[in-house]
Image 1 (cartoon, rainbow, N blue to C red):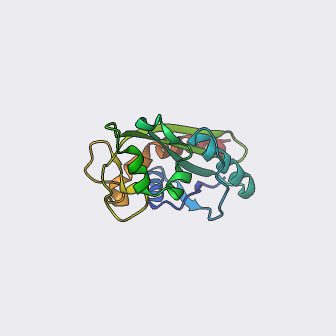
Image 2: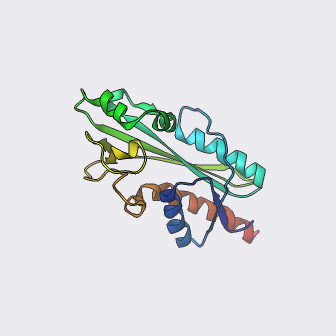
Image 3: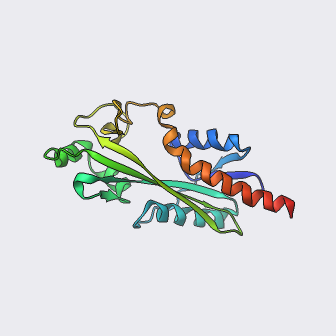
Amino acid sequence: MEKKIYLLTKNKGKLLAAKKIFEEFGIEIGSIEKEFPEIQESSSLKIAKFSTEAASKEFNVAVLREDHSLYIEALQYFPGPFTAFFDKNMEVKVLLKILQNFENRNAEMELGASLTIPGHETFESVYRVSLEISKEIKGEQGNWDKVLKLRGSEKTFSESTEEENVDIWIKNYKILAKKFLEVYNSQITN
């Protein structure tokens, strides 16, 4: 077993965070360019797990994927795991119009990560980050990123650099790097 994890992502922030964390643990990072279908499921974790299990089986390597969902309090925690679909298909102006009569601008981002290692169980990690939704569009990058920001922050994700937001992704990667090393170390001692 090689000391390497392959990521299923093109997100620069996630790649930056993974590189930062896995280097600390002496784990090499690779990426799989193949697109795997994003199933519609009830949680980010189930979506990530489906992809890592399929990719690990196909390529016979350790595969990690993180998926995130946005839960907007004023919309009864909608869109949840359907965030990617709505972010791609609903302009940020429409989201703001829907929210215009709500004072509550709180939201949470659920980050679910899955690590599948061939011949071993799939390891999982989930946590949430508190966000708020700006009343005005700020920045040029992304769609909903122009109104989403960490709770208490002045900048939206669109206005922020990947480096400024790298800590959002780190928690799951640390947990799963440790799990990977447990399996790796047990392989080399046996």
